[in-house]
Image (spheres, rainbow, N blue to C red):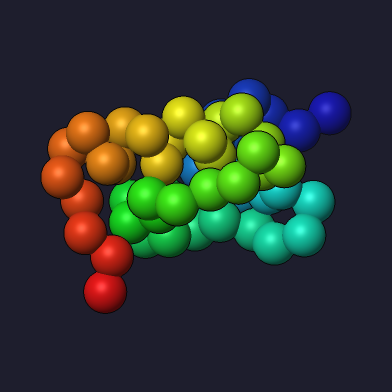
Length: 54
């Protein structure tokens, strides 16, 4: 059995189509109703923080 360690560091969020790296999540501001809730929430937080995409 594998040793418990930083599991979060080994996981990559995915919406079933693509994987989201930390840099992507830090800049996402737009989503659609078909996107996962976690992605919609991240985009809403980024918009509230005033994050701008390039």
